[in-house]
Figure (spheres, rainbow, N blue to C red):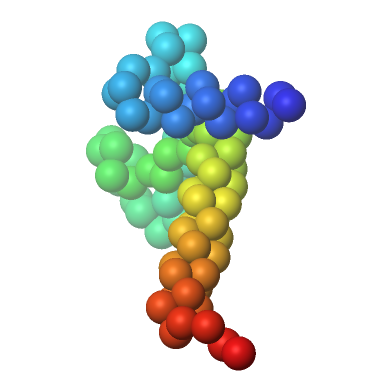
Length: 88
């Protein structure tokens, strides 16, 4: 039940192109890359964004896409079998 609601919210967000302001907030952690002597430039750091929203959204939408792909493949196989005509 909750998963269906989350999926609806996330898929709607993707298709509408709107992401809530609170979902867009995240904390960025900069970790220095090893072997770089000069840490005055951003490119010498790895960035990590621990955003649980994005991870959750990715998992829910991926599950939705996998389900839709599975249904598509079943329908495609069903149409192919029916195109053969009666089996008996």
